[in-house]
Length: 356
Image (cartoon, rainbow, N blue to C red; front, side, top):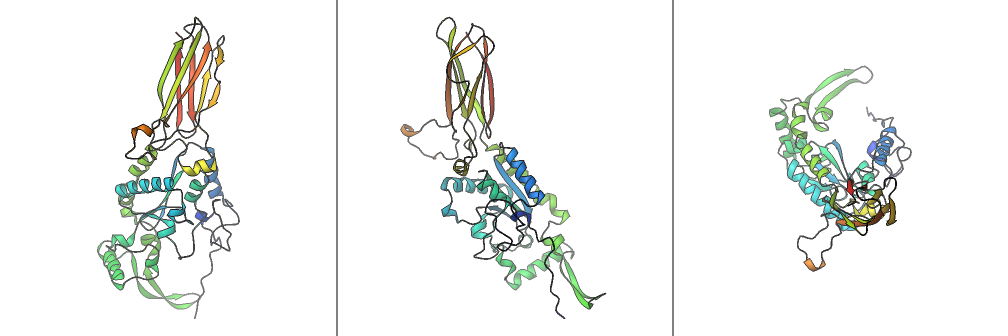
């Protein structure tokens, strides 16, 4: 008797339901009726959209024991070179901290050689929001059993018999046999006598067994914090007040980006125009007058250290990580003036100066 397993009624893979490079269900199983057709995906999109200060994304999945980077439908050499170098540096740090290899979805994690995976959350956050994004696939039973240098997807199609023996030995010695159910007869009420057994895929393969969960995930907070610490950070460099006459003063504000990443985060963000530059504001009290300069002015984006060369001729090195703005104010001596510089992704600097 042949039993054909029915397709799941829901037919959904939420990580195919995001807007970037979304494809119809006929092209990609689990994509949903339209981008963000599912409330879970839509809520994530809305949250990210409402929080422009987000500078990085790490999405946690199972399984394979790898750090995945996009873009899913483009080889590395067709992506922005500077963004790719930054991604590779972030991935290298992730590997150093967690021990997980960092790999490309396009080059190393395809289910079929000519089939790209698209519509994923990390793809959308990079392609549309311009932030560096990763998907972590927790847990590799193969690596636990001592199987190394295997192709993450291809292994499930074909591998050495010795690998199966290693897996069974690991199951016996470490899992005490809990990961594999011996084949046995069972009388099914509709089908009659059937055979049941094999690997416990849900509890041993696709998820970390509970007794190993804490150890498996414990290295990742350090990488998450490191990822956050490379964000752009707006900082005060200098303020000055110069007296021009009895009641006129030049006010200067200089701010810089102390972060490793530029204020815009990625070249993709510049391409998509999803950020705007540093905004400087001067707030005058009653009786003070602005003679020159603007009350609110956009000063452009600031670079970080991510794109700086390790060796650079001093004669051509600029100061594109900092910016200066000046105002001329007419007011009484002793008047206090509030200055603000802000950027959605780099934070806010507030300072008060006295005219003297």
